[in-house]
Image (cartoon, rainbow, N blue to C red; front, side):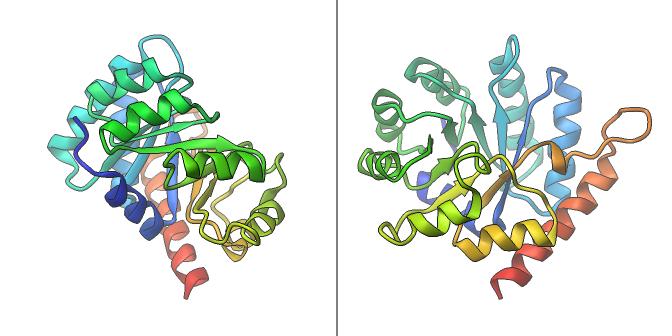
Length: 223
């Protein structure tokens, strides 16, 4: 079962300001990437539900996190239906992220007091997701639905909405500033966090350093 409640998850996401989004079929690569994120200071991680047997990889990765990385909150993204959400909750997921709004998925997560973060692309969808109990709504794809300007516009009629864009976010000062100035709760970042070396392998020390720098940027932007 989940280790962290939805409120603990939401507060941690806000504190860091960045949620890494990652998938790999090799559990050992996933462990190294997760450790690099942890060493960089991140305390939440979104494993993407893609590829064959992704749930088995997550199950092993979550066991590793709970045993070795104290305080790491583990979630799953790209969840498209209630059955898949239930499967990952059985594997101990602390939060569920989806590119869509699904009432049935909301019910599954709400029963377990687990954070559910649905993908929205309009004010109507965001309002509906909040009505269904979403503490944080994901705008996806962030850049394509309108970017920071969309977030700022939404915060006009819905100032209480906690918004997490994924897609179109980079760990640079220029990019992060536009999102946080618009009023995001946090941002999701995928491949741009996970640097590779000249041989095409993940460069774990550089990933850690990239994350440290990005977290410092977020603190500065909020100060």
